[in-house]
View 1 (cartoon, one colour):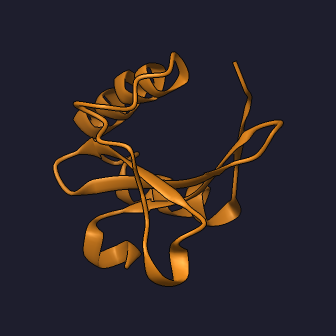
View 2 (cartoon, rainbow, N blue to C red):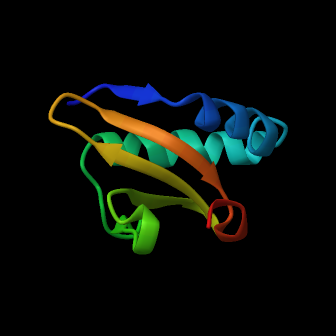
View 3 (cartoon, rainbow, N blue to C red):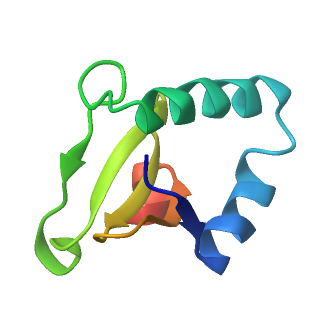
Length: 88
């Protein structure tokens, strides 16, 4: 299992958008565990991005909230998180 590195934007937006909502924190933790064991289909709906962000991927936390990440040979880097409008 590859480790996760978190970009400062991810940490900043997680603190603002997720931390104040206990239910969102719980949902994130559940989905993160699924991501780490290799689930990429429902309910995560992992997918590649297009356009300027085509080198990145995203997975769903809940509803419209996504985590944008990139994968290297050594780790996953979580770059940002938020709603579709906040990210794109």
